[in-house]
Image 1 (cartoon, helix red, strand yellow):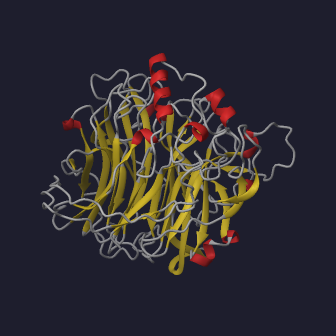
Image 2 (tube, one colour; image 1 turned 60 degrees about the vertical axis):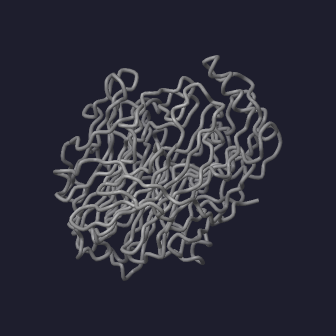
Image 3 (spheres, one colour; image 1 turned 135 degrees about the horizontal axis):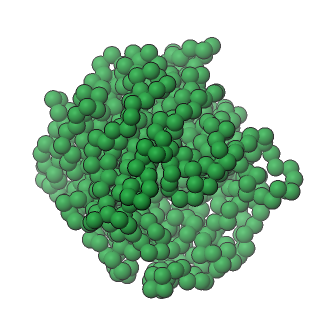
Amino acid sequence: MTKNVYVTKVAVLACALGLAGVVPAGAADTATESLVSVGSPVDATSRNHQNEPAVAIDAHDPDLLVAGANDKVDQQPCPASFVAETAKCEPDNGVGISGVYFSFDRGHTWVQPTYTGLTARDCAGPDPCAPHVGAISRIPWYYESGLVDAGDPAVAIGPRPLHGHFSWAFGSRVYYANNTASLRDFYDKTTPDLPGSVSIKGYQATGVSRIDNPTRERIADQSNWMPPVVVDPRQAQTTADDKDQIWADNAETSPYFGRVYECNNDYRSNGRGQIPSALMVSVSTDGGDTWTTQQAAAANENGHGVNEWGLGACVIRTDSKGTVYLFSGREENPALAKGAPLGQIVMQRSVDGGKSWTRPRGVLQTVNSPYVDPLSGWQVIDGWTGARTGTSGSPSVDIANGAPDGTDATDRIIVSWANTGADAANQGAMISSSTDRGENWSEPQSVALPGDRPLYSAPAISPSGDRAYVVYEAVTSPWRGSDISSPRPYHGVFMSAPITAGIGEWSAEYDGPTGDLRATFPGGRLREERVGDYLYAAASRSYGVGVWIDVRNATVCPAIQDWRAASLAAGTAVLPPPSPLTDCPPTFGNSDVFAATTG
């Protein structure tokens, strides 16, 4: 069965610290929750897994939202023989993971369209099967182009171009960016009849899909989607693009109105590891048909090497004057840090439509978890075999650029991230803002509710700059260490605050019910928990929306927990592990994309 829309009343909120005050005692939820990933089953792991959601609101038609997420809905249910040999659920078979969802009522209900592409969702049995063409619940036209939709989705909505000009009078264009790879790389070179002619030199590139003027009828017809465009197919053979973000300049006052910007990390280590990593920016002046790519920050500028990791997890935005802001994160190597690794949020600017960029400049400090899990190698926040936080300190950004016309812009920049250090003083959903183009920043403060230890957070600001929003997801238990038998409760929260001279008192619009992080895994590896590397928020002039990964409907698997404990003791994944389809509750691994909207 597929997932239904859940509407849950939650408890009265306690007082919570904000930037300029506290939440009044007894404040109740004012946002409406909704299930975004409505096409996914609740069972048949790992088909029931999503992570890393993104969302965008159409500034010209704020009833319209588009979302994306890593969605395993078209994977084969976890084949037992593959699990026994690899401790993983997903063979590398070329089936993509980039789910797409639309709302036409300000985020109250969602549609996950069905298209045609490469799928293994209807495979059964203990052995990996050969994927085939059939129904999919993901972004279309990748298989037909000879590509794989490989996740890390980013979405944006801008004006539609017509005859070389951009105007809201022509309607809207949705941009969906994600990692992509060559389908041929997943098959033997002699395999016949693979479709498509697009070639990618490196291990992984960025693909961008587009659809104009979405309606319920138009999104139901696959032919209304344009085939994906590979942003930089001429990359080197040893590179892998990752952690992409996309933005369309949507304010009419901008001299670059309609221009589209995409940023990503370019890992130059034979597709392995995190260093060295250059920061790349691609620009399209024709609505995504063609792209020009350049290096905004070189690998040797990024602090890469033994002591610091390179710039990563970029985000790109524009103000009402067309200035482009590129943010990224830099972090100490946790193996060499003295205590919790410190990091920086780094900013660059372009005033010529992305042709040239200022040098990277650190503007805010971050604190990440010092705990590196011995099995996964990732930094974790809740305990060993826990949920990773490697990108918690990376920035999420929004700008009050006055879209769609730009005339009442304040151009306030708001930045959010999660501090995940080892003690309460270094934990929180952090917020800072700037009113002078990023030259100076407000003192960072956490807006998290008492008892919450956030993993990731994301802000949004109304185009007119009169209200700010933050969504975050947090574990509510203390650090568990090697105790993997105790619950690790976790939930999503959506906050907002008015803005006058500054950001006012924060209040909880939504405080979601908890689930247990131990019931999650990446959809592939069984050795650790996973809810993703980021989440997202967006705002119109009248409402805000946040999306996160929710695990209220996931069930802990005792057999998996026992196996994780044994693997932790052994220092490696012990083979064979339990089989999720036969040894676990049906809803083990069931993570959902949820949204909270004040629309």
